[in-house]
Image (cartoon, rainbow, N blue to C red):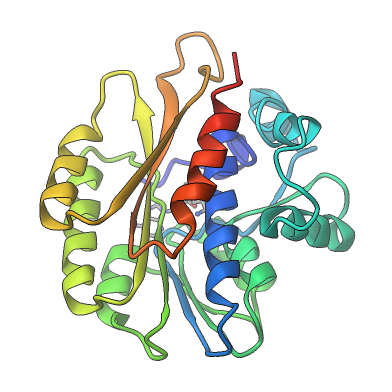
Length: 260
Ligand code: SAM
C-alpha cells in the first residue's frame, strides 16, 4: 500500500516524544567507549522541511516541536536539542531531523547504522542523505531486522516505527519484538505506537507485556491534531531501557501533561 508520508506529521508531538527518547537513549549508551549498532526498520527519508506545503498544511509541527521549544522542554545540553541545532546549522532553520538523523547526530564514527525503508521516494531521499554514514536498504524492515539481528557489535538499539496502515502491523510488530528479544537479549528495543481513540494498540501491548515483563511502557497524551483526528497520544515500548530512562520519561510525561 505505502500511502503514508511522514512529511505531513514530521515534528508533531509523537515525533517529539519518540525523537527525544531516542536521542537520550543513544547519548546514554555512547558514554561507554565501545561501538554500537543502530538498526531501524521504518526509517523514512531522514530529513524534513517544516516550511513545506505538506507540513504547513497539517500544522502538526507548529503544535509539536515549535511548542516544545517555545516552552523550553529541552535544555541546550539535552541530546535532542543538540541534534536539532546541528541539523538546523547544516540544513537551514526549517529543517527537522527524522530518526536516522537523530541517531547519526548522537552516534560516533565507530558506530554502525543500518536503515530499512520501503517507499521508493522516501528511500531515494534517505539513500542520498545517509550515503557514507549508514547502510541503507530498500526492503521490508521487519524482514530486514530478522535477517541481521543479533548484530555485530552486539551493543545497540533497534527502533521500530511503522505507519500502522495495515491492521496486522500491531501483531507483526509484537511478534518481531518478541522474536528479536529472544535472539538479542542485550539489545535495546524501542517500539513506537500511536494511541488512538479506539485502542487498537492494546492487544499488542498485552502480548508484549506478557512475553517481555520487564519492558517499559511510556505513554503521553495530547490534544488531537485536528477535530476528529483519531490520535490522542503516543507510546514507546522499550526493552532493556538504560539506567535513568524512567526519570527522563517521567520528566517528559510531566511536560506533556501541561498541554491543554
Ligand atoms: N522513523 C521515521 C522518523 O521518526 O523520522 C518515521 C517513519 S514513518 C512513521 C514510517 C515509514 O515506514 C514511512 O516512511 C514508510 O514509507 C515506511 N514503510 C512502510 N512500510 C514499510 C515496510 N514494510 N518496510 C520498511 N519501511 C516501510
